[in-house]
Amino acid sequence: MGLIPILNFYNNLSLGIGAGVMFPLSVDIDGYWYFMGYYKGVEKLSFNDIKKLYKFPVMPYVKVSGERYFNLSDIIDMIVGVIISYNFGMSCEKDILSKAIYGLSSFSYESYKFSDITLEIFIAVGFGLPK
Image (cartoon, rainbow, N blue to C red):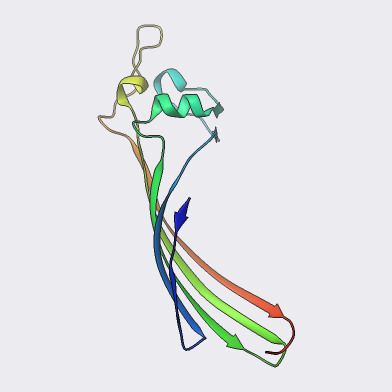
């Protein structure tokens, strides 16, 4: 859920900047979580598991976008654009992750946080009636 206001310049260039939050409802885990304490070997997490594992179960993000509009003919248009977004991620609850299994704790990090930066480039073609 978010908001990205877009400014349109000369009817062929659009720039936007926005922010929002994402709510992870479930997680499918691909691979083996060796350092995930009690959750090692788990393949799927529910929202309740996510609430236990993370301090705040939401991921804020910021996004910047740019689009260029090209009128190729009377009935064919093309849009080229780029979107850069940064996801601040969620901080793990290290006490839950370091919960002992069979008397052993396998979690060795002081903090654990997932975040990412994404670059999207797109091209779109539109067909329709002339203006």
